[in-house]
Image 1 (tube, one colour):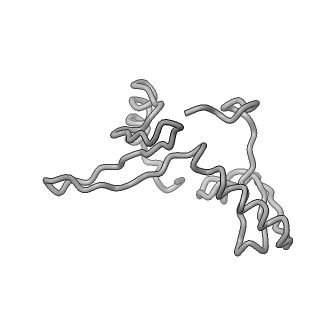
Image 2 (tube, one colour; image 1 turned 120 degrees about the vertical axis):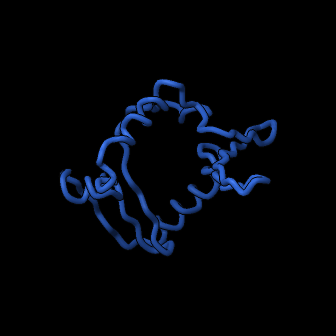
Length: 121
């Protein structure tokens, strides 16, 4: 998947939320316990339906170009598996494991799973 032009993968980013196409929240807070209890986070909530509608429409028009659609599929033996669906100019690609993640990153995540940090998620 191509990265958004002009942005590095380590760039700063905001969390933006449109609420009922009437209000917006823009801030730095992640939706996890660490951000709530440890980090210094900021944000602003404002009521402006014009901006909220334009932002929601832009999101709806562009999300399929930059994000995967995930499904939880049930196999013949009843096991469940996540599938990653990517829209491309040539059609759809379906991945059976997390795309664009190499062995060492998966290995590192596997090690981190052993740590007692779930309460921070």
